[in-house]
Image (cartoon, rainbow, N blue to C red; front, side, top):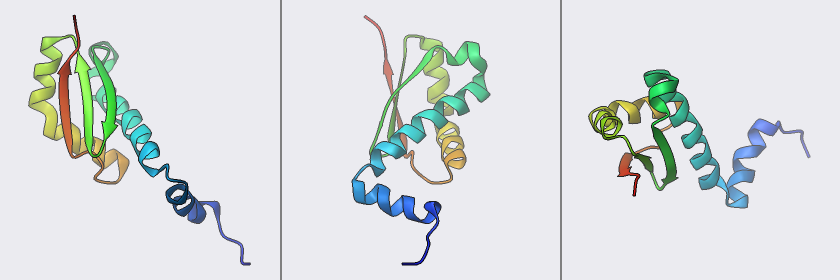
Length: 101
């Protein structure tokens, strides 16, 4: 059996194990936080919580109306920035939800 690099084996092993979606979701959540922190800074991005990523939809919540409005305006640009950072078109839409009482 010829030697294969770990980099070439991992994608097929991940798909075979059935954890591809979970790994993608984790990467999306991490990259989304990083991108938002770079765009808004630590202070403003603290008002946003990335809740989950499922089937192309990134769910974001906040209790700040101003942050929610800003996200609504910047949705397309944020999606493009996240996908560019990931190197794939993983995030197709963003769902905003108000966190509160």
